[in-house]
Image (cartoon, rainbow, N blue to C red; front, side, top):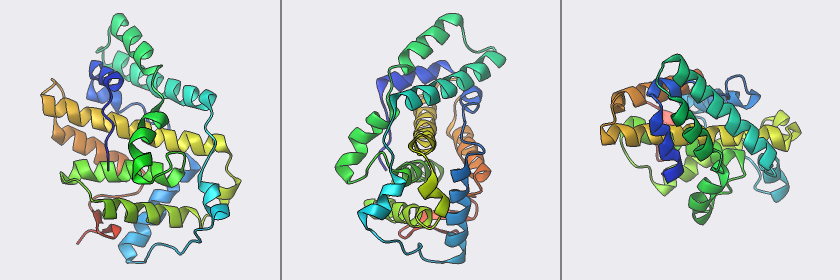
Length: 238
């Protein structure tokens, strides 16, 4: 799955890994349970739930993006990051201004859309955001690049599971956007951590990044010790 590496996000190098771990506003989101549902199906060996491909059905997974919602979510993430950095004494006033100004110009969905749309994914679709986050996470954990077939199989797993949840159809565009863009920010932060570790930035290491990613997935009840990403998407780890 394509990773996001944009110059504006390199500002995150101003923060410590501990600070980056602070910015996860997805905890408690009703849709977070989708991870547990798909993990359970993968462990049991069940196929992805059958779901009609009719446009009317697919529409419940998409949302009309709002600049206001994007701005609010971005501010929430940035405030969490800065709070964590200040608590650790790792962020100067000048760096805080640089970080806020730089990230204020980032449209996370638009950036990922440039990379995902040519591959046939709608960036304003919750299943796309779930696939991006999970596939990117397992790429880091397992140290391998996934194939297009694996990416698509994972997308179909999430798509099918989402379409079997009645509550999804009642979600507002804002609720879906917050969840989807939150996953995109998490993916971008993880990609930044990996890049910093590879560059040898003090305080960063692939071991720490992988531990952080594993912990976040386990918090979503998708345990990499039990689940792997294979040709059929998420599967039981044997």
